[in-house]
Length: 254
Image: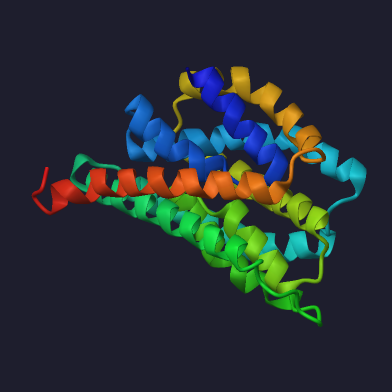
């Protein structure tokens, strides 16, 4: 089962640059019973390898912006380190339900926001280049990714479309590379902190490697907008379920 899950998630990552941690964490918690902190660390390690395989395709096509990428990473990398350390500090049974609620709520909110953006044709592209603000935008994105493994693809894409005049393919490529940088640093720290299930990550990668290679190829044949809409709808349900699993015990309802 893990191989099939890894294959599907990797295809989504390769096609859209999004969906790695946002999709993997709810699936690992709800379907595999993995603790929240371990699911975050494992999904980041998995996403790192998948994005490493997908990034060269966008590099060869020159579908990325070096300047925008560096600006995002300037804020995103310190943020992801702090987020990972924060999650590790909450890795106890006492805070397990709170972490589940935060991760699930974040996933659901991001998914609904993505659906709204697709419904309303997304942010209007700026007439002038506002990329100088990207480091400040990248900081909270990195913090979110380090804590929940979610948001690099969705929020990074929104930031690039809102603050730069980049074309859609360049947005996907730059966003994918930004997510790779955050996943590599955050995943490495989570591994050092003991939040990565290596055996589970390897099982995910048995299918994820093929998906990572197929995703960029399918991106030229399947509308990215259609894929993002389906992904967002699925994530809104999974995120809501994860949020309820975490919040219900805190409210004494479960």
